Image (cartoon, rainbow, N blue to C red; front, side):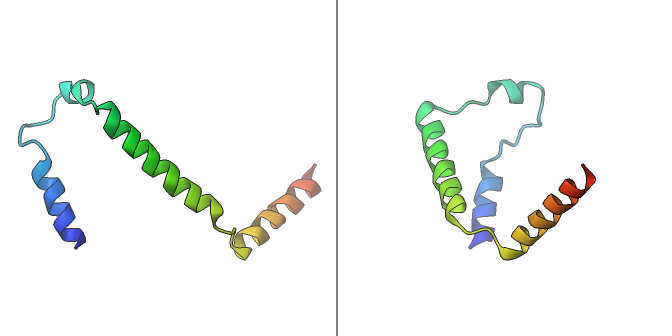
Length: 71
């Protein structure tokens, strides 16, 4: 299924060679910008709801101990 999406994206790219004008002329309409922003916020909110893994907590504790010992 992911290969189908990749093929669709590849076909959507322009066949013309890239030039300096590409970076300045590419824009998104406001509804597309809003939709992308909403989706990014939803993904980020979901990520923030996940618990921090115990291993990460242990590593952070070790870093805090080293920091306190060096000062």
